[in-house]
Length: 126
Image (cartoon, rainbow, N blue to C red):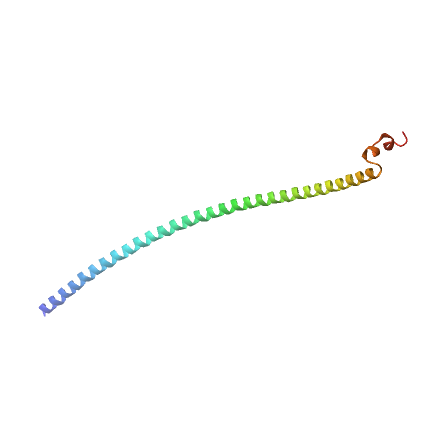
């Protein structure tokens, strides 16, 4: 029985040593996994920082674009107003030209510009 007890004890010792080695291996594996998780968390934080920077750059670019667009809209509105003023001025000039033509026609019917502009015709009482 002693021999059997010694064999059982040796088997248990061997099993215990194998279990201790397995626990050591698993502890190392868990440690490696924790190190990998820590490394991946660092990468995630780095990517989040990069993403934040990119989002800030996008926001800045968007704001610059909006300002340029607003400036362009302002320039277009100024041009529209200038065109309206020029159209209005052109219409006034056209009316003045038509009035001038009408006066010239009247003067020619009255005997020509020299007769219409003659002092006697300009000041009939003089």
